[in-house]
Length: 194
Length: 315
Ligand SMILES: NC(=O)c1ccc[n+]([C@@H]2O[C@H](COP(=O)([O-])OP(=O)(O)OC[C@H]3O[C@@H](n4cnc5c(N)ncnc54)[C@H](OP(=O)(O)O)[C@@H]3O)[C@@H](O)[C@H]2O)c1
Image (cartoon, rainbow over all chains, first blue to last red; front, side, top):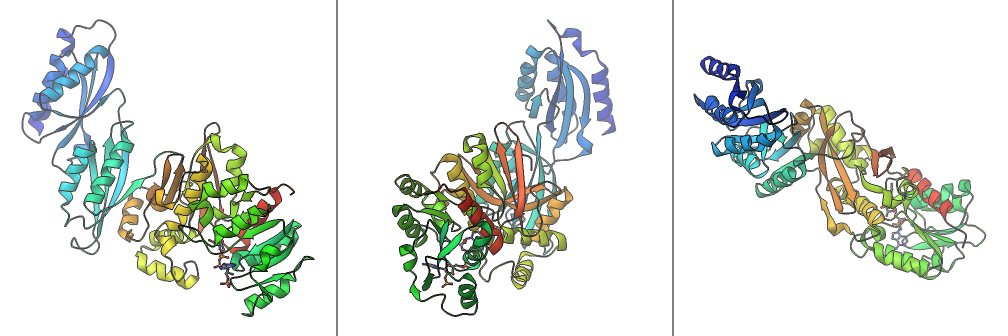
């Protein structure tokens, strides 16, 4: 971990704008990525940013968290000319990096959902990966309560990061996963001042 | 106004009892078998005493109500689904005789809204139904005052029994079955609480709201409804970890009706406790309005009925 951190620091220190052709102002952007926990992965990920005219400002591992799928969520702040930004995101995706959210806002929407049912018997990790895949959401943490053991009805609260404006669609996807897997989905009440 | 009251349960009896206070006369009162009718005003105390004491309410056939000389029919018979009978026919009969109708019975307004409005259009009488939604809370009149076009959505808690159960589960860490039994002992839940806990009762109210917003088009079958029976105590615990709780929340818009358990901020306006109800009316130009209060009970519901009577034009 330490070794990699150093690598990152080295990259950040390198003046990345050297080869960036800025033809106007630059803007700050935040990109949220999910990395596989393998050596060198972070460095590999950051290359397309510099290569495409982005200037790295900071990188943080979100609270050292690991997503339930074993990935490491990473948030990268960078600056670049606005017309370059889409190219950077495309390059990241082309390089096989899982880009969760990209935009000028620091965070998308964060939404809590409670699932109830035979969660464990119904393959909880499959449920979570379906949510990440079908609802294009990132599971940021999960808290499970199974007072009567994992064979019985249990509840899980999952905190999801969802791109701004995509919550309704994401919740709809989660509802349909819930009905597939016979789980009760307790959604947040969005809209209005609850 | 001269009132003819159909139904001598909690609501009908309270309407009869309070009518005088609001300046109205009761000329007929009926239950499912008999009626008492008097053009000069029935003996309300005597009738209520007989009813509560288990004797026949009156000596007339219950149909005699329709022959009496009334201005407003108060429909307070049990709510029924689908064809909403016999409530619907009662309303029809009164409108065809050019009389007003005030409903506490949710069935006709939820299930056959357009037919009611068509009958009303051909009648000198009008219909009003504030009591069907939120008991004592002025919900429909608030929407009417803001004009329905300016209201974009109505959300809230409109079933006191389900809200009581969820509140107790969260506070005591008890499971659904346990709290339901307690609610039944306290008289908060009926012996058969099905419609309260499976969301049907709340859904009927939100269907009525959607009908008012969209000027018809909805019935119970158009609503997406989920109850609270499958919510374990552990789900409420998890919600609390994050400053939230679970409430049976309904939503009505012009696009549809949804009722189900939802996460809401623990200290937010919609997280009312006990049997209290609340509605949030979202308006186009004036933000959200909240009103909360007692959503059920004989006298509470009767006040809504009598306020409606007061809003009717003279015939
Ligand atoms: N209670 C509330 O807080 C509340 C709130 C809002 C709306 N409502 C609605 O208001 C209505 C009345 O509620 P409630 O609590 O008073 O009900 P209830 O206590 O069950 O009383 C119903 C009354 O209707 C009578 N009835 C049944 N069929 C009839 C018929 N064909 N003709 C004439 N009367 C008939 C019954 O007669 P018998 O006495 O002979 O059985 C009884 O007196 C229901 O539709 C309910 O959904 C109630």
